[in-house]
Length: 197
Image 1 (cartoon, helix red, strand yellow):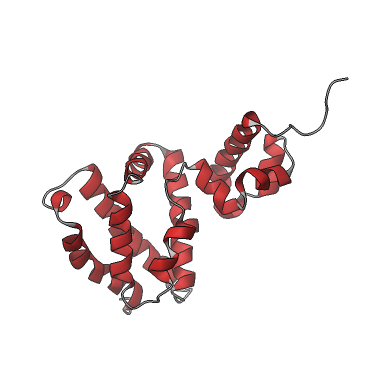
Image 2 (tube, rainbow, N blue to C red):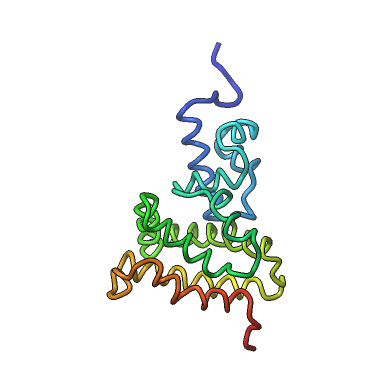
């Protein structure tokens, strides 16, 4: 007798879940996509999604082949509080881009600059995995948090593009500590100082 029901767990199942998740996150965003919908599209039980990927955050990171887990990387940056966060954030950012994880990050940013799907996914990654964590951990005013986060992201992505993709000198060969000392005060201002109207 032919088997009916849900697909058994194997590599094909894992790939089906990832494919369904990529579509869901790209079309509905992180908040709009649900594990139940993704499981239904993949033809599996939601418990199998949790078995392979854990929480929705982890599934999202897997769809992007994210080389870093913000849940592990960001607490030391944000949990000490607002004082000195600009310096800690720039130092952590450069540490990622200068490490072996930097190669896939460069590829992701390049792809986002050329493809709508990649741009949507990178935007969702920044908002759901980094910017919201920063706003919560730093206890930013909810009315100002999106603006502050966008300003920080513009500075950080700009540095990533100019230093690691376009390799604009002298920024490309500047020692990391010099980048930190020049950029951290701006990041600190975006996060802590009163915003102009």
